Figure (cartoon, rainbow, N blue to C red):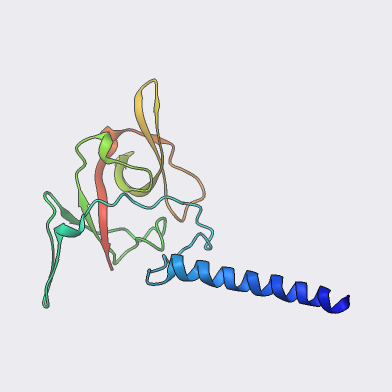
Length: 162
């Protein structure tokens, strides 16, 4: 009877081991794993909206061309609020959004607040009695910026080059 108990434990262990490895293989194999995985204390679960389609990215031997209408380059102040994604030395690619419908939860936006340009991630989008609002927060901050309106959003970051 003791051998059957040990055998059951071994079988359960092996099934768990094989299951974990199969799941890892099918879901991660061949994919790049994002840096954070939620293990760094960052509770932002939404990634930016996929703005640039693959047909707008041309890769050559000597250059990469991004076909993006109205794009401009942005630089960032060394505040640390968006580490590890953005900081001084990062080069951002940005556009001017045309409407609220182009801003999604997870997007990184530049908005004006008290004559300052702030770059933070949209963590919530909603509607109140004044219309559509966005709540933003720096990835490395513990509190949000409160509600902001589309009229305050100057840019949407659509890519980062380090």
